[in-house]
Amino acid sequence: MKSKKVIVFLEIWFIAQATYFVTAQNQPNDAEIAKKQHEAIGITEDTKSTYKATTHEDAKWFETVGFGMFIHWGICSVRTIDSSWPMMPGTQIAWNGYKYSQDSIDMYLKKGDYFAGHPCKKNNSCITPNEYWSLAQQFAPKHYNPDTWAKLAKAAGMKYMVLTTRHHDGFALWPSKFGNFSTLNYLNGTDYVASFVKACRKYGLKVGLYYSGPDWYVNRHFMTFLYPGIEKKYKNVPVLDANLQPVQRPWTEQQKQDHSDSMAVYIRGQVKELLTNYGKIDMIWFDGSPSISKSSWSKCISMKEIRELQPGIVVSPRFFGYGDFKTYEGDINLPTNKQSEWAELCSTVENGWGYTQAPLKPIDQLIEMLVLCRSVNTNFLLNFGPDKDGRFSTEMRSHLAILSVWIKKYGKAIDNCIALPDTETASVPATAKGNHRYLFVFKNYSKEVINYRSSLTIRKVVNLTTGNPLKFIKNKNGYDINVVFTKQTKFPQVIDVELS
Ligand code: GLC
Image 1: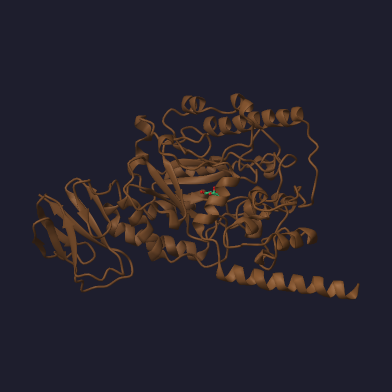
Image 2: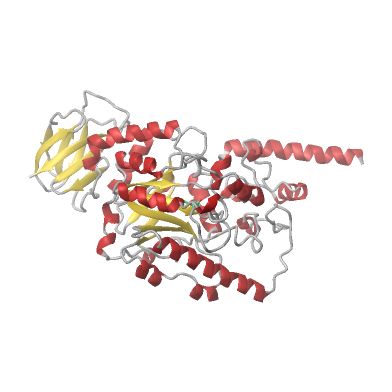
């Protein structure tokens, strides 16, 4: 008996070491994480045919809007954890990089450690769904003032703002008449969406509302909270309830169908509220497909109804599987080729979407991302996760302040600019507007010239950083522009090329 205990102990110790090793050596990258999350919330692989932009006049802004602010905020901020995902263990097992054997999985399952020894235990981000939802009782933002967000966004050159009105966790930030998990049941019906919309309008920002198709709260008795993706890889995987305990789901087909129908009605009700109660909404940023059966779709919201409620709205493709633009997610998924359809990359200033106290990504790197996005006709939606009181951290404010200085000087090279026309190329990222071309020189650009290939004639070239003219020489394919700068900076420098 004693020796068996020793063996088990050794096994656990060994797995802990091995877990540490894979954790440290083989972290899944952003692209892998986004892919796995998308699989779990029913976002299907992008296929070209699914993106066809609306031709409505009022939606045209999206084509060249350039830069926007994403806000992930909700009850998760009470505990300084990411939005929704921490309540679903198993993601740690499924993401590439963690290549567990069936034996180690059996071991974790036997111990009931569905987080598989993941460091979330140490950093306080392992949480059961019921614990996560109970954060709603402590959610009492003292300084919620979206005016401040909008003001900072505007100064930083952002033209639209998107708020998570309801994430996968199911907590609605407005007093919804549908369901029982919103500010109507908590917070005396305070409407955070209304004040958000008002703030966007005040600062001339386009209004975007994020809404998750999946709702893990409403669906809690019908789903498993162990990341479903791992069933494909491993045997003996239990279904977990909202206390992360193994459970049987005894529902009959009829009960499942009734539940699916009621979720469809609930989602339709909530989306209609968002699209009718707040005046003009410029964008609905759906995220994921609702967990309803095919036959329930007729009871859910349809694209036609959305366009009737808000004729000029821009719709993300993640709910219906088609929409007005193509969505990319995470720095690593930044498209490298010029986009012919409307496109947007969403990414974060932090690692994760919700508020964390971890250091942010360097601001020069984020500015480079913005430039790269615009040089391939892609909008950049940059996420900030405010704290539980609704405030940005000091570091976020400082990032935004730096951005606003850069934008003040170089905004004209981003605002309403598009990628170079097909007949022109440049050896650095570039944008175009009228008879101007803007060439961006990043800190690691080591050459002395930029090659700008075009049959057009250059009239003048100016370094916008110093205001000084730059020399250029015509060659058989276009021009060589001299970029030996007297002043170096870690932020992208911009060359303004004026064509005749
Ligand atoms: C993914 C994540 C979700 C996040 C969204 C933002 O879908 O599941 O947490 O809100 O990306 O793009």
